[in-house]
Structure formats: C-alpha cells, structure tokens
Amino acid sequence: MFAALSVGMPGVAQKKQALTLNIVNPRDFTKDAYRRVDDRPYGGGPGMVMLAEPLSKAVQHAKSLLPASTKVIYLSPQGFVLKQAAVTRMASESALILIAGRYEGVDERFIDLYVDEEWSIGDYVLSGGELPAMVLVDALSRLLPGVLNDPESALQDSFSLKDQHDQVLLDCPHYTRPDVFEGQSVPEVLLSGNHLTIAKWREQQRVLRTRQRRPDL
Ligand code: 4FV
Image (tube, rainbow, N blue to C red; front, side, top):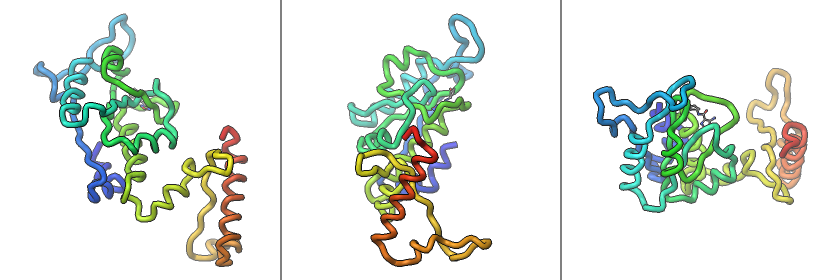
C-alpha cells in the first residue's frame, strides 16, 4: 500500500530529500510462528484487537533511529479530526512516528504508554489506518520547504486561505484553456490581465463559495 507514497508530492519530497519515509512492520517484532499482531478482545465482542507488544517494540525501534522528542501519532476515528492548521504544525516537526492500526483498534495500554497524539482523517470507519497515515504524509509533504514548485500554491489552497479576520476560506474556481469548453466560457475578469481586479474577484469567490458550501467555516 505504501508504494503510493513513492509517486506524487510524497515522491517529489523524497527525491528532493525533503522527506525520508521508513515503513516499520509490527509483524517483524513478533516472536510466535504465526507472527501474530492481534488477539481476541477481553470482555468479548466482535473482531480482534492489535497486541500492544509488537507495536511497542516497533515504536521503540523507530524511536531508536529518531530524536528522543519525536512525537508518536496514532491515526484512528477516536482522534481529533485533522485540519490544515494541525498539518501545518506537524510539518514543522523534524520527525514523526505514525501508527496505522487495523482490526477493531489497538490495545489501549499501547496508546496510553506510547501515543502522544491521536488524529482522525474524518468521521467514517476504514478497514485500516494505512490510508489515513498516507493522507497525512501527502498533506505534510507539500508543505515541506523546497517541495512545491510554487510555494504560493500551498498558500492559495482551500483551508490554507484566511480572510482578513483569519477565517478559513475555500478556494476560488479555477479555469484553463480552451477559453470556451462545450459552450461554457471563462469569466471575463480572468482574461482581462488586470491582476488587482482578478485578485479581488478571486477573494469574492472564496468568500461566496465558503458561505454557500461551508457555513460552518
Ligand atoms: C481512521 C479514520 C479509521 C478504524 C478501524 C482502522 C480504522 C481500523 N483512522 N481516521 N477515520 N481507522 O477509520 O484515521 O483499525
């Protein structure tokens, strides 16, 4: 699954040596023949729970290769819902250890002993924490210095944009060639070459779109 991180922005970030990824498999830290990483839940109930031991050994191994202050982040639906502000804060860390769980979740004692922050990519349940971990890596990779060709574009994105009251805004509509597509033309203002008018129009569109689509913002 993690091969997807060798393409796109995470791939670019690695090629530019702005990002180093090490994938650690808890199965490599098991002792039994079946390399078990899960077991049945105390108290009964459906599904399996990830064992604390292999995860703790895997995290200790990862920590041995990283600064002692490295934060351990566990991706789970029980975490804070991830927003751009948190991604921006995380991007300033020199290293992070991301825990991708499976099954019903992990033994709570592992979380209590080793996890610094628990984050969710959204209020829905996936089959594993690998995609959430990769989502976070992707969001982080584009914020690392020297990764985006035009650093401006990171600032121009939805959720990176703030209005004059520091409110988060959705991004404005974007257009490219041809100037007429299936009978639909491009807003005249964008063809005017007047950068001030264009900037004003884009700002108005951001505010309008945010009000219409995300009144919660
Ligand atoms: C999830 C999320 C998520 C729950 C059971 C993995 C799955 C399985 N992680 N944001 N939403 N995780 O659904 O981060 O262990």
